Amino acid sequence: MKGIDDASYRSKALNNLLLSILLIVANSTYCSLPAGIQSGNSSSRDDEIHEIYMLLTYSILYKTWQGSDSSKKIIGNNIGALLVNPAKDSILGFDRNRHASTNNITQHAESRLIQHYLSACECGDLTGCIIYASLEPCAMCSGMMTVSKVKVTVYGETDPFGGKALERLSLNSSELADGYLPYPDVTISNASNSRIRKELDEAQKESGIFIYKFLMNDKAKEIYKRAYQLFINYQVNYPENQPIYGRARDFLEQEVEK
Ligand SMILES: [Zn+2]
Image 1 (cartoon, protein in one colour):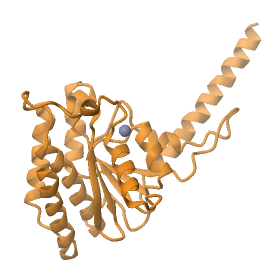
Image 2 (cartoon, protein in one colour; image 1 turned 90 degrees about the vertical axis):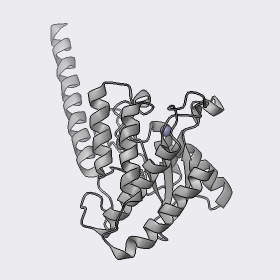
Image 3 (cartoon, helix red, strand yellow; image 1 turned 180 degrees about the vertical axis):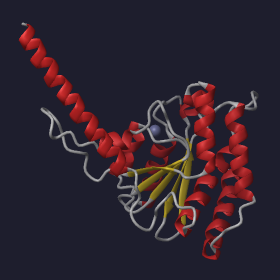
């Protein structure tokens, strides 16, 4: 019996080792944007565009913050998503989490955004589009992004609870017994390079508060306020980004007035 146990143990250990290597490879190769939309080098024009759209996403949430006024009914968590067509530098829409007002736990920002936009545009899919998500997408929204052919998602806070869903979809375990290939054409997932994302990640970790509750508290709101101030005082480094910033400012006003 001992021999069988040892062999079984060695086989399991080998499988775990192989899986660990695959995870490291997947994580190290996955989180990079295609050429032209690199995030991470603040000196590029495209990086500035990412920053503008990410700050816009935070700002809409700050200006429509849920939870600070107890007389108002909560419609959902402070989580939002912005849809952009980078080829035309145009904002296609914004939506937010509405789990409370709909009494439906599946009413996440990204899923609502994708479904509503596709229903209205009758364009079939979202090839080439980018979604700026204030929180790292969950498994449900990651699946919907991938199926609808969203090119990239840039997220504004890490979700230590339900994150890395797109990386998990891209995992290749086909070398293992009963393994499988990555899901085809998985949406690329990138953490925003914004300092606000880093502040939120650190504050949530320090607080020890569960991510969705953290996003309803005053500490998170303070950081979102800084994002809003950064956004409204933003000075573009690249003059060609001025019209993009101008349209983003107009979009903020429209969303707040809704
Ligand atoms: Zn989701």
